Structures are given as structure tokens and as C-alpha cells.
Length: 231
Image 1 (cartoon, one colour):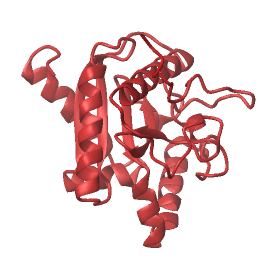
Image 2 (cartoon, rainbow, N blue to C red):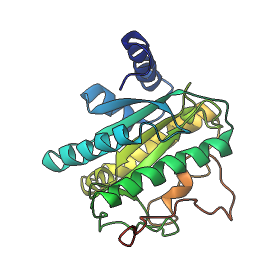
Image 3 (cartoon, rainbow, N blue to C red):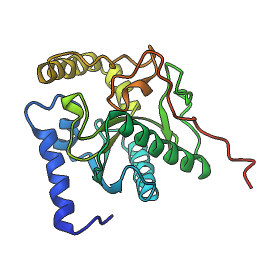
């Protein structure tokens, strides 16, 4: 995918790598992905547009396939949208869910089944997205994010495979990793992220955009829509 010229693409990609490498950045999982070479960075144009959805979806499909072939930890896909626009947290949240809905619809259209280990109902505490039969969750970043760890110079969507966290639990490593991230995030932001919760207690959809959503917030995701009767 080409946004302008190769040097500009490489500069933005490198700035994201530097953002993750920074000593204060709290997500040690992202740091591990970067150091292991298992972080794929996909460049796109504008999160407000579906222009690049047909480039993002194959990248998700490829990540799911690579993970099934070799389920090593800390594989992730980062999508950077070079045209940042001027949007607040609620506007970003709306555009993030529009991209998620579009990508999910493409997964259904292409005959992919949802991951049976999770729910595709965004109100269900066991909700996760599914692409190519693998469960994913999304971490959103953008310039106006209230949490410093979510504040990058352009909008971004980070897709992480849900099964990796099940692996960590089975290996007895999950709690230590989680506590490390929480402690580092508090050190950076000065407070605990109020949206963080364990999978299975409340829907993880509340965490995707990074905004502190209201108690009565309803996820705008319509789920995996049935197109079987479409003309």
C-alpha cells in the first residue's frame, strides 16, 4: 500500500516502532512483538473511509493463517492511517467501529466462520471479533486519546489474537504480564485505566477505542451480519 512515497511510509512506520520502543510505553506484549519481528505494520489512508479495507482484510487473513501454522506468541497486526483528520475520542470511536463492521462483513461475505471459542455478540462478556476463524481483539490509538498509552500521532488499530492470551494462561505467564502492563500504565498515566477488565467479566468491546465509555454505553457493532438472503 502506497500513501505518498516510500520514504514517507518508512518514516511513519519507524515513528510507530519508536513509540513502542520508548521506555515509558507500558505494553510489554507490543515490545516483545517488535523485538521478535512478529509485528506486522500495514499502512492505510484514512480511518474515516473504507478505501483500504480490502487491503487490511487480507493482512488479517494472513495473520490468522500464520498463527495457525506456527502459534508463537506476540504476533500482531498494526494498521496506521496516515490521514489523521481532526477528531475527538467519540468521533474516533465511531470510525473505529465502522472499520471493524466493514472488515467483519467481508469475513462473512467470504464464507469464513466465527471462532467458536468466543461470542460474536458485543454485549456478551465472552465477546471477541473473528477473522478467518480466529478470535481477535482491537486496541485503538489516535492523537486525541485521553490515555497516554493510546496517544499516537495518527489513528491506528492494533489487532491481537485472542488465543495468545489463552496460551499465556496455560503457561502460567498471563498474570505476571498483566500486572506488569498495569503497573507501567499507572506510572505513565498516573491512574489505572477504568476500562480494563478480565475477559469473561464484561464485554471487551468497551476497551477497544480507549475512551472511558459510559455505564449505559452500547456497542455500535451489529455483529456478524447474515447476508445469505441478499440479492
